[in-house]
Length: 205
Image 1 (cartoon, rainbow, N blue to C red):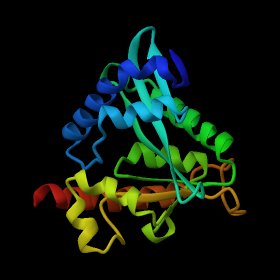
Image 2: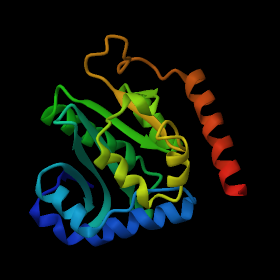
Image 3: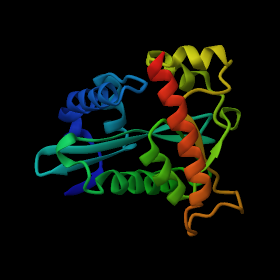
Image 4: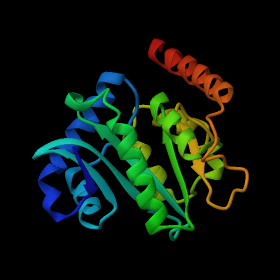
């Protein structure tokens, strides 16, 4: 498996990346901000993405978005092709995009919003902590990306204070962060229980 910083030679994978993200969201029944191949191509060309390839076969992907004049960056669009799941590849990609973010934007706060419990756990291991949406970027362009999500009505009804997604943040200047420590399993299990309850209620509606 080859996990590398994406470049112009990977533009040909833009459509399969979009299709894999969309299909994954459909299967899980959760919301997701849809991305076009053109949007993905820009991330492939500016060196702000990680791609995993098995020979010439697409295996996984994640990219960086920059907000608030580089005060915030988001690691977005983490996806692994169905043929390569349950092999630890997502964790490797997540670590690679995190390291790339820290290298390119060392002073930025790294954040993400997700409904995925596996992603939450990976974030914990990297030193992220759950936060309210008010602690994330207030850049309207970021939140505009949520308009294509099936749960956007929840975000608007709560005036962008909460949704089914969990906000998580890595602050390089936070002395209390615990990147090298064990995961706080009690906190994680509590968070997982809350998210599972919310998702179950949403599905029943």
